[in-house]
Amino acid sequence: MTVEITDLRDNKALDTLPERSNGPLEIVVTEPRREELRQLGEKLAIPFEELEDALDEDERPRIEEIEGYLKIIFRVPITFEDGEVTEATTTPVFVFLSKDVIIRVLLRKMSFKKLRQSKMNEVQRTPLVAFFEFLQQIIRSFEHRLDILDHKIHEAELNILKTIKPKSIWQVFRLSKDSIYLEASLKGNIRVFNRLKYVKTQQLFTNSLDQLEDLTIDLDQQVELIMIYRELLENSLDAYASVISNNQNDLIKILTSISLILMVPTLIASFYGMNIALPFASSQYAFWIILAISTFFTVLLYVFFKVIDWV
Image 1: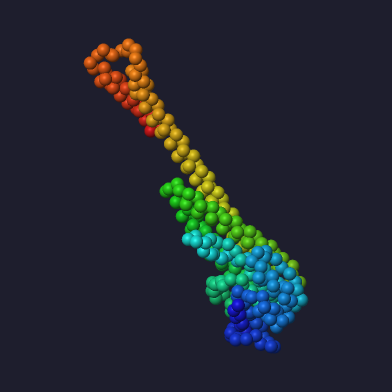
Image 2: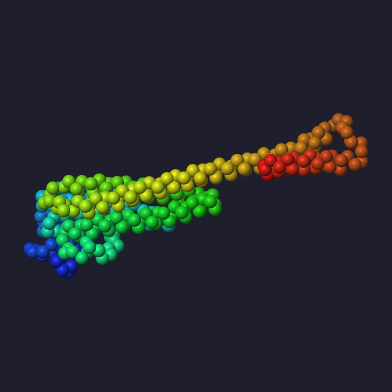
């Protein structure tokens, strides 16, 4: 477990958690362990049962009001390697917020893009300001993941048009699964954002409703975007199925044409295999005459199928 402690008054990093702090603190806990969380909870007066939830990878976005803190759970996008394939999913991030401290608990090491200087960055940093900065970072992380998803969807569409291979369809299936995870997490985060507007704990968000509304709009736009991407993926699957069906039809036409073309000389040859009197049987040119007749009808059938675009 790694713990980063920052005094928000001067953005100065601290080596240890002070026994008593006169200033606001930001604490980031990464890859926590059970016993270390217990010790942290004792120092910060947070029940261990609440911190223990941070060890659950399957926690859904929600809000809980506990004594002295507001416990908020979001889900953020991450990527992981599965053999030779890079897949995307989401993981929970826990935030414990009060007027004097903000604690973030991350199950995995994650790097969030630093925000550009803005009005929010210029004001005196407080736990609430740090919280809104973190919300913006969450939104940026989803934007980055959606940009990657858009690029991969375009790449998958080109692969389907170029070649019909199982690898192409598996790529679409993986992207579809990624989009489902992202959409579910975004909708869960939106529910949390909407509930934050009505939180009464320490009146944290009384003067921040406009900021919450703006961030909620950003998330709504991302949900709409990912729904568009899912439609594109569904269209890609439909296109793949159509191409496969057309290729099968073309193959059946070609095989049918070849069978019918070869049927004529086979039929003539089978007739002349009978031990009965047949036309040209006594002619010394019988073989060439029969061959010419077979060739004529074979060419005639080939031209016919060529005209109707079967071969």
